[in-house]
Length: 291
Image (cartoon, rainbow, N blue to C red; front, top):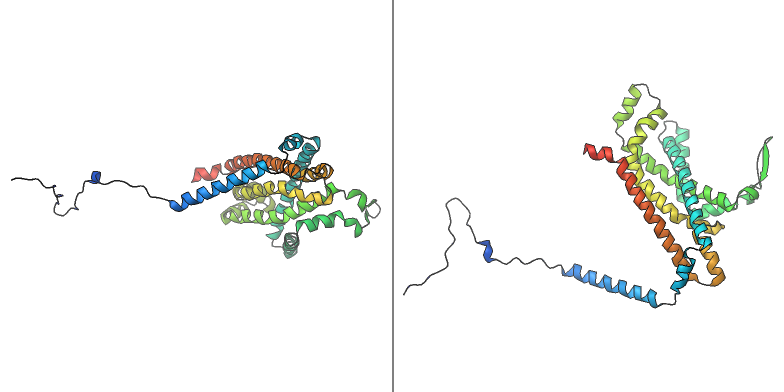
């Protein structure tokens, strides 16, 4: 009686055996840990959303005060303070970074001391010091020119602007210095070889190349500045959080007004993040072409 048997795989001399892969079933890898973690996170998010949806929060008040005049004024004041403080902070940072890299020891150590003091003390402390400057210097004067009472000019706006910008300058100086150091030393030597002054070389050759390194952290600092202005509420500057606090002190709708402020912060930060990504692509276009 004849019978058939499965054909044995043929083996060619000097070659590996050939197997019929169609006989095997492909089983995808199971990521049980990831699936479990995702499920737990989704359940917790659902519980959190349900808690806020059924908690003691009047969501109608959130919509009512979202476009209130005081809130909109706070948003505008926050943006104005952020732009001005960041612009001055970048100016202070660039000057400090150049002083830090200067061969002049006096300029170098002044820059080191500036960064040490303003990075080593809390920002809220600096804001309070500026706001209460009249306790130390009752008047600000230049002999023969003018004399003015400090309390009359050190308004919450000016105190916040000085505190935020000078503090930001100390951090920005390190970012700028890192960007300047990222430029190849040959660029410095080439500028020096053609007789270009140091400051002119920084302006026309070094800084444009360093912007690719400087811009991302400076953009992050600007976005952070939007939120940092909330500290100015401690010295009565009428930014977004201060105005929200003023309203809930009157109507006791604390959570509702805090949600209003939080949503506005998210909107502004999202728009600025989009603008930051466009600027980063613009300044890195030459680097991408070289790659």
